[in-house]
Image 1 (cartoon, rainbow, N blue to C red):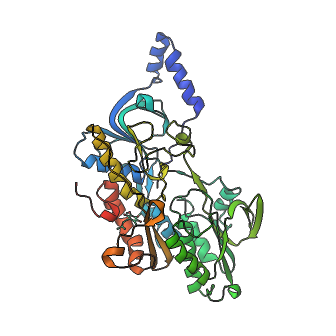
Image 2: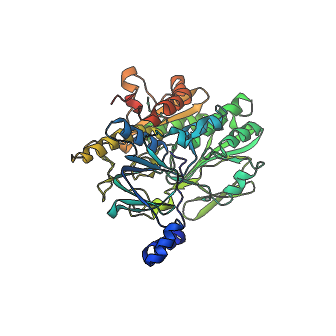
Image 3: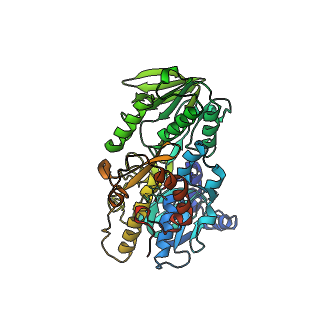
Length: 455
Ligand code: UQ1
């Protein structure tokens, strides 16, 4: 997860800069340097691209190993704010205030780290160099590429306008500006059709599009506007329209959620992908070039998401635009001193902050081992998690690894089935995780299901 949107300077600007530095005659070059046009180059042992969950966690875990001096590690990120994005569902459900979930990014970075609060323009992995937006260059021994993914509000026609129109009934918990609009629109709805969407393709936290629906349903139920036992005669009707063929990607949890959907009278529109919003019409594509138009009074939209352009266009990306790393070691498949984790990586697991708790220690150990000339043999098993709110006061704690195989932290020790929604998991999600995140995780001392890290 990351609010760190590393914007690329325009190609034209970058090209102009390199022409000046490469072709200018000496006299002009002197003039250029006086005019502060020539770029500088600085060296760091590790450059971390991105100050989101993965960037902060990895940088501080590295620093805590005691092997690095002042400015050995650098973080590049243009963002002013760091957001606890898993909390935006709680904002949409009226349980948290969005301002309390963000902190100035600068305030979260240890002074021993060098912070470049600027965008990144390009990667030159053959020369161990990255170029910043202002033309300055950083060289490195190891590069950690963790800028997250882009939530593309332009991916659905009419979405931007609908979101910014305060009267539209359209919201999204996937953005700081619109997460509280979800709460306002849910509370304002007294009758009519409510639609909750999930797109086809990669999204972060694949459970969130339905978490907000379950909270809304519970609110309407408590307000007497929705009767799960008698949905057709309730003032409000609820539809979950998803690009996926099922409720959730892991069969064990999907079965439970499908049962809940049926019990609660929610219509399922599977393999339906929202492509356009036109007034109160939602247009979905499905099947082979077929379109379905539905009227709505409230709609919660999950936009499409994908790799940032500056990653997609770089040599580090795979075809889909993600940083192409080994699934177990997190090391780049081509450049041995390049690493990735989190949303920007090609790791075939669900993109969550919980996944980063398991990825970060593996990446850190492997970077340190390879710095000592040793084999990078620490392995990530694909662990990720989705604390899925099914109503106010209850969470189903999905935890799984590669292949959609459950890997439940409390299952064995407490002899419980985490697919059963529970109050204790609700408090983990609402109170414990936001607290442990800012107090320990971003500082490099929280290992997720493993608890606190000691070394
Ligand atoms: C976790 O550590 C964490 O980060 C603080 C989350 O929040 C985003 C989580 O959702 C989960 C599941 C974990 C994993 C920790 C335990 C104790 C299961």
